[in-house]
Length: 305
Image (cartoon, rainbow, N blue to C red; front, top):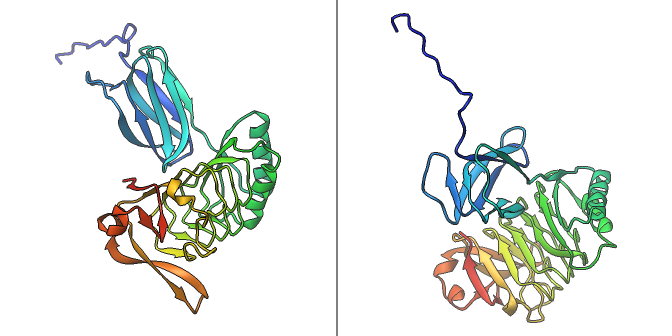
């Protein structure tokens, strides 16, 4: 004003917070669980907070603030873990940090084979693949073959992007210790049959499961499923989705809060036993009180929402 200049000097300016760049998949929603973190512009340290972020077109998402000593955090996509880290020393102000939460994109069978072999050669046990949404029998056959000679019970596998695990898709895959299927809506017949060392299955968006999809397990402890609307196979008949050897009483089952009670009956048209929702809320039913679902007894049934 009045012809006078205003001079702003930034030479000695410093940020009193840090930046964390999370490198992941482009244009995807992720969640970050974090503690001992003070957001930029705040003086209130947060404990056990969850932040919903969306990566940009280059696959970057950001957190700005103060990361205290022993601040730890985990990055997930639809419940599937992508990366975690602990600051054993407090982060430095005005410094940028990068967390690698990238996922390997592999569409063709050859790309899938090469990606898995490279990860195994690098001694990776947490393997995350981004597959085509319509990945089918050929791609899953390649996955089985690529893991065939990998040590039993060593691989935590995350498959992102694909919508279906086809019949026999990952059967008898002894290398698997856990599997995360964040985008899968259908799991086919025998899809994970006799993956005997699996301890955890997470498929939070699945709605359709075919016969014997989860049969043949002896180590399974935790199963997370989506809101089921179509399940095939009668419990304790040799054709249910779980084993009939009394393993389910050792499994903790997690269902969405909107899951309905499922009623099963034989359908002559499809020649299958089919479970369909009844309209009754499962978590307000006697079956929930007794830990029963789809005719099976579980160690516990809990809501994951």
